[in-house]
Every structure is written in C-alpha cells, then in structure tokens.
Image (cartoon, rainbow, N blue to C red):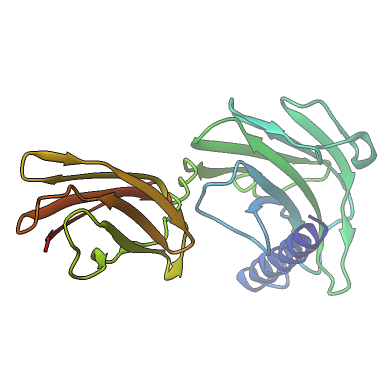
Length: 270
C-alpha cells in the first residue's frame, strides 16, 4: 500500500502540474487570474487508473490546483460525497488532514506552492465497494478568494466494479491405463491366471484403488482376488478343471485419482 500511495501521489502531482501549465498557456499572461479547480484520480497499484476493476478496494485521490504562476495561497474547502455502496476504507479522511464527517466528508486546507511554481494540494484515501456495480464519486471545492471560473469546481468520477472472475477449476492429471497382460500367456485349465493392468496419472506411476475382479468360463463364474501396488492393478483367478478349450473372459476395474478404469480380457485355456 505504501508504494501504491506514493505512486498515486506522484501521479496526482503530475496531474496538478499539467493542469496548471495548460491553464497558463490558455490565458494571456497579462491577465492574472486565480482559477481553482478540482480533479479526481482513482487508482489501484501503480499510478492513476481509470475504467473497470474487479477489486473492491480502490485508492482514491483528489487534486485541487490553481493557475500556475499566479495562484493565490489560500484556504479551500473540499467536499466529497460517496454514493450508496461505497464506504471509506482504513485510510479515510481524518482530522489531521483538516477533515470531518463521512457522508459527505469536508476537508479544509491551505494550498501550497510547489517547486515548479504551481499552487495546489492533493489528498489520497481508499474506498471499499460493497458489491459489483457502477458508482459516481462527487467532489466540489470552494475557495476563499474570488474564482473567475466556477464551472471546474465540481467534478464527478464514475468507476465500475465488475464481479470477480471465478478461478478456473482445478485440472486433474491425465490418467492412462494399459491393456491387460496375462500370465502365463497360455494358461492351463485348473491353473492360476494373473491379469495385470499398468496405471499412470500425469505421466507417473500411481497405486490404483478399489480393484474389482470378475470372470467367467462359459456359464461358470470364476472368482478372482484383486490387489494393487504402485503402477499396477492385478486380478488372480483359479480356473476350473475340465474346461480346457474354453475361453476365460474377465474384467478388471479400479480407480486412479478418482477416475474409474475398466479393462476386459479373454484367453483360451489349454
């Protein structure tokens, strides 16, 4: 916040100098006038900012300046009105700044002359938006000396606070599984058959969970016991005797990082 406020103060100073210089070049130098004006700059982060934001806290600055080279050192009264939905943050107008009240806030301060000869003053505060929407901040300045142009003593700044953008959903690592490998490759009826599937997630081996095994030989159901270790899921089946020449058909299912994997196989018994 310190860096942001410092950057904004610097930007406000530039605004004040530019405004004063433009006013000086627009008027004949033989006529000395004291045109006090108000300008608003809203910022977040570095420097001045104008437009739309999804942040609900805004740095808010006001510049009061007079005609360069001939501005009068005088007291001015600044009145700031926040709309419903905007409220002052932790850095609000305070008594040390010559301010009182909140809605509106009224500040009285004497203008000062800068090193480059401009006359003016600036304030920096922060405001907080209760919800998304478009808000108008209004400010007015009342000088104690005669002001030849009162049309620039009132200023309105419109700022839009957009709804925050929802973060993208977390991405799951890509899950992959191999085909079923059978051991032995040419099993005999009545022997034990192991069916294994390799599993990976995000390119790395992972340990499957919830391994389930089913199989049949013709109309006969064959029980299988499942197990897992890092990188593989295995189902072990005891094939029935007297089923040579028939086909063992089975299914292995398991989960990897919440994803259900199912693989089927068939092998002819000798």
